[in-house]
Image 1: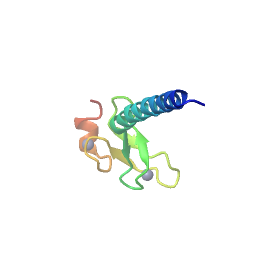
Image 2: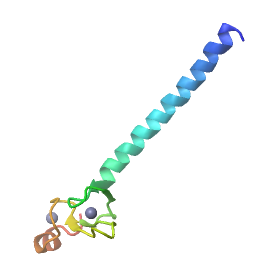
Image 3: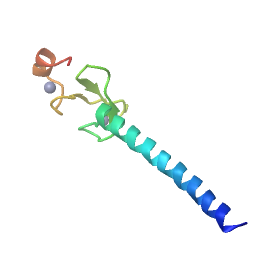
Image 4: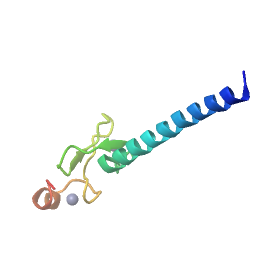
Amino acid sequence: MSALSLSLQGFVVDEHAAMQARWEEASRETIKKTTKPCPNCNIPVEKNGGCMHMKCPRPQCRFEWCWNCGLEWNRTCMGDHWFE
Ligand SMILES: [Zn+2]
Ligand SMILES: [Zn+2]
């Protein structure tokens, strides 16, 4: 194998890794915007559209909280900012 083809291969691999990194960065950004850790058990929970009412999907937890306040779901949240 010549030095040229080796460096060419290296380039292709680097390019692929760079693309992968960009894609991972983009998906991390999306996850950051649409998920928050459950205040009770800390697992990331996905936001459901414009609704501020969050519910932990873990059967052992099922904690309900407010995306806006980061606190347990309450009447103020329900009346004031249930939806964005
Ligand atoms: Zn939880
Ligand atoms: Zn709230």
